[in-house]
View (cartoon, rainbow, N blue to C red):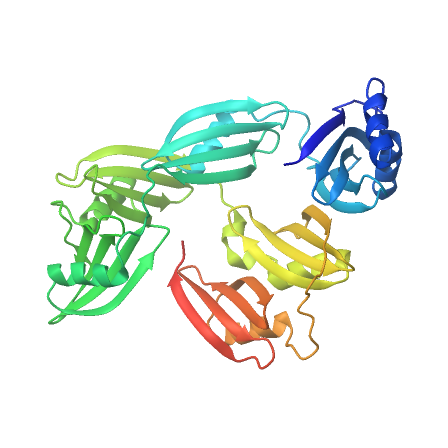
Length: 438
């Protein structure tokens, strides 16, 4: 267990040491560590700004100082060796220049959370110390926890927890096929598990018809059954009828999502028409519209893959800051950033790069030991691996990792997600998996 001694906290202007010199001196005498004044000077040799927090930690590797510095353009969190002052880790968080000093407000924070997850707010409060709004939402069997930046409204954390301790995949794929065949006596054509939805989708062919069955992966219950694009759910109304009711109600548009909530006996349909997005709940028996919500769409060009700078450009941006070897590069669609990791001269660097503008939002640096960089001159480059993957499937490369001599490449085309494994020496495609996008 770590033991932590706070040397100074949240001091405006310059670091004030009065009242804590004795604490630092005590540890210094015991373990020959640097004083808080000395470590502050060391910190300011790495970054420019004002020290406003110093903490002394005891970790397995020995005593370390954690120092926070506010600079003119960014806030820095440094971890320094308490004996030598060597930089072990650096985290940089850049300020957004358009912030001003105004908070978005609790109501706006709740709206942001509810836009991400349509549910019921259980708790909403402002954390003054971290300048975030903490929101908890309940939806179905899940609880969602959000941390929302009080200045920008950006979702900093989103965690999803299932109330039930049961597995979300209690039945096997083989069992799902058996359940499907017990309903439709035919031949299984395809069967696939969709973890994001917690269902199996099984296609069964019987005579001239193909049936699509949605089976709850926990209970084994058939949720929906479709034949020739006409839903034959346990309710009286088909999903196609429900979509038609929704489109008529909002004056046309395009269906974004539609599904049957069998527990409540309603169809949940989302429609986009012009600048607005509509959410409707429709009685699955009578077709009556029980609920209708309208919301102006905030168009985000990040949803358009052509507006993204691309993984290769993000890697170039990271390497323009640190000359080294890319260990991973991934697109985080939820936050709209590329996460790029670089190994260089015994340090690991992690970058968050705005996927639209290419601006570096966050940069972290940490000393690493016994690094394996996968830097083999006989390997093909990550760009070549991307080209090989794109020659097999069309779309946008959202992730590429090199591990144990194999490139793992992820590609999305708006409907499907592809995962390919490519031999880093020969360029041979070792495996290709296809699944619906979450």
